[in-house]
Image: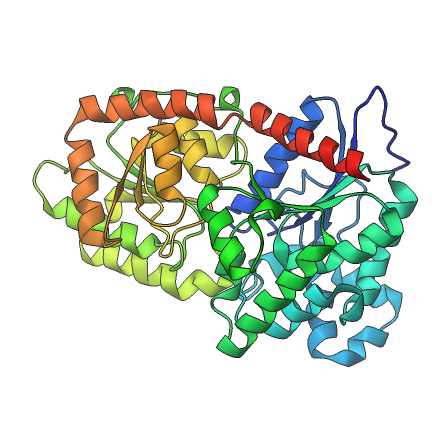
Length: 440
């Protein structure tokens, strides 16, 4: 690839990003990719360093940068120590593109439960079982790049920071988004150990950047951090990349855009839709879903399709298999509102910004950062409790009121442009980078 040369005050930036392989709608992958584009648009050199799996299905994010910590070899080395002594050709085979695609679709490739030891070991960094992979990554960056700053995607990767700072000698910062979603399903005895280790490893980074005020407070408690260590920079989208269409110009369809799984509340949407269709006046309404799934979700997804069929709604239900690039715009053209009723809320939910930038109001449970985003944007409503009955009631109220739906559509579009513009957020991020660089 050659060295990355900074010029004219511009920065060389490294983003270290774990990938999902494109098997499902990955909000964190999308966040990092959008910042990558926005920082480059400002004239800076940005290099993605992918971990575990490719970021997207068609691998448009990968050029000649290798995938570090390949998911399959990483797992085998953790569980079966004999693989740690395997020859180099075995690693190359396991990290080949066909194997990566297979791993992305496999059950458990994104499941926290059962991966407690590996998570702990990754946080140990140079003291963990993956120290050889860490040295490989750090040496590659040292040889091929000349970064001014290194940005790690989430706090589960804090184990990388100490060696990166030692070898590269530049500021390292870390984003905070949904680490609790990974840790909370783990066995209780592991949870405290991991949060405590994350607290210790947070000392190795120069700053932590939360995606919402809600999540900054949450991580301050969970990681036992001081407030000055965490800065909030909300996520953003480039509104000009989306096509605004008023709900008045579309059919009255309900949309769901996220991984179709229990955690993200896909069954809540399905049950709410079934309830909605029992009410008079909603005969025309369809449920259109996209966002993909993994092998872990197969049984769950089959059950949701069964409920739809048993209620005679198969003709009113559609799953769109593609959700990247132009396909996401096609999805938003088909729906008048979107709901992703994540069971415990989320640190943000970038699909909310994508929806509102497309003129699609959002209907979200009053959990996590959802109230914060809806209030700042003005482009939706929240409800509680997070039950199918309450969601169905909220959907019915909006679909029966085209004037309110249109008002929320316009407010959400303008609110996203005013408060969640990716270019403004990129400038905030660059300002932080420059402050950290000046301290070095």
